[in-house]
Length: 301
Image (cartoon, rainbow, N blue to C red):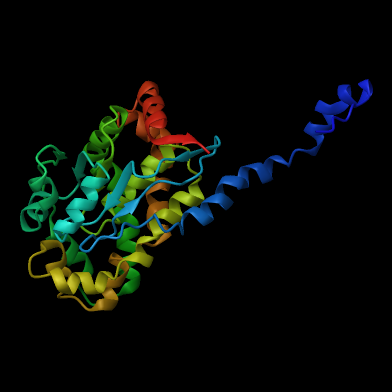
């Protein structure tokens, strides 16, 4: 190999030249966002399951500090009731050891998680609570019912969703800090309670806001919620009430409109100053817990 000797003056000037040629700070800040546009479409993003609903891997996202979220470590999902034996085998192959189920009592009773029933060594966390769909139906009814009213209702609903589900998110972060991964968390559609949980987690890990919102919106690309609602209304209490309404009223409710998660973030920033402050103050994620979660869920690029 030929070695080229540089004059002493050139060696002394080398650091300055390197610094001068570095890209502007704005370009450096955009790098993770650009990289994540590719990561969003990664074929590993959605699990190839026979009966999975919106079952997605949160790996592959570049963070602001130059790391990347690990694949096959944390998953977000909709109802696990349709998972087949072949799906159980795939989840076992991935080593999923913890399942956090954000659904309420009635939802879990009507659509049980067969995977955890078949794998008793899997930690299965649930909480005792109920949702009142009567209030929802009252808001969606009346002469002024329509798509705009439904969308505005969801925007308002998201302003309180993170606090309403704080107990669920608090437990999820506790498990992640303890290293109980691979971990999956779910709700019914896999977009509201689970989608907000994913958004909070990715934010804590330093994934850019633009990517966090884009990951939330992916549900619209992967799930035919109209078909799912029609197929499961008979046994799913959440969908049973909605199935009685005209589709134009229901459609905004099952959408993953970026305005919804942005509404949640805006409410948290207004009240707590930042999303990170909410995670620290209301979800009890200490600096040490954050460090452990960051170490467990990210790696060098």
